[in-house]
Length: 192
Image (cartoon, rainbow, N blue to C red; front, side, top):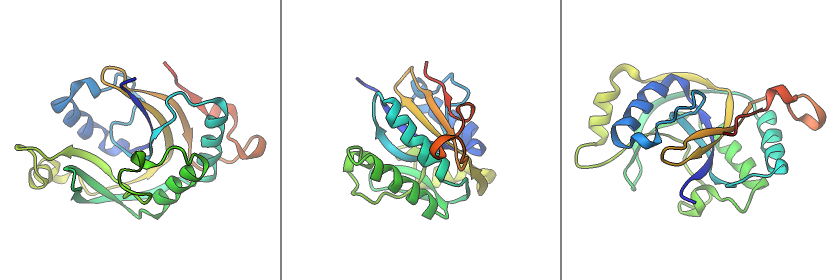
């Protein structure tokens, strides 16, 4: 299997910018699915390649218990591996969501444990290369940032060249239904 799943929070305010940058360096990862969050903050990756109904219910419970997150994206950074990103502020609620997911799914540590148990929430913009740098990305962003938004959805997305799509989606902070689960119409199954 060449693809993988990601639990992610889409950031619609940056969707057009990130989708166009993706089209420029790997068009296979531009999704035809209109709900797909090219611009997103990762909550947990990778996740179960074929999640069970029990897995989906647990993610739904966590999403329902997680309030929507007012977020500001302004600070540009670069990880040692070259990933150029924006840092969300505050990051505490995002860290808490990742911790809740890892507590329920300890066999799926963030990024397969490559960066330890504590990872920095971020929105990936690009990757450093001979033609892409932190400064060139800052210039390209121009007045696109700062972005102030509210993260309201958690998506289970499939990432694979030519097959990126949303598999399932939950609204954040929607307590209701049995045992705190969102009512069925609030938990949207979008498997292709």
